[in-house]
Image 1: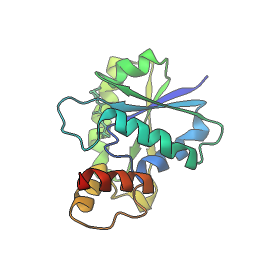
Image 2 (image 1 turned 90 degrees about the vertical axis):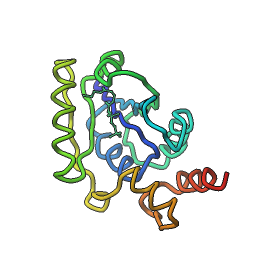
Image 3 (image 1 turned 45 degrees about the horizontal axis):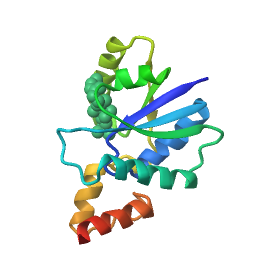
Image 4 (image 1 turned 135 degrees about the vertical axis):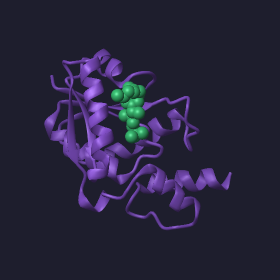
Length: 163
Ligand code: PNS
């Protein structure tokens, strides 16, 4: 059983995240999409809202025969991955600028849990500039984010802003 954990803030889910999920699905039997419950940050969506959106969007994504599970977690990714008996942590790399941060995290996670490897996947070029932060900023200022985030996420963002 090859199980991977794909950790992130997912505030909100973007098409870049979905691209990584699709690309990683042939490599594993199960992927746990792990939504960080980060008390330090002021997120746009609650952890439950983020998990729910991911669960709603996932059926529209090609995930081969890979089982997809969505869970929230607090604390260390390495601890969470160990508790799931995962063999890998999946992270997406969009551009060289991501590399240093991701390398530091991967090395730290390996030190914390040497049996779990981080697997980096290159996001599609069309998503190389897509981040949750940029999507929120552009959307809040009235810019178009069509094609960069799932339609459902765009609707939920609109609902949030209209509240
Ligand atoms: O989507 P993000 O915000 O880039 O994801 C970052 C995330 C959640 C993977 C990272 O912040 C993380 O792993 N946080 C949990 C706490 C932890 O394990 N910190 C040490 C990482 S070496």
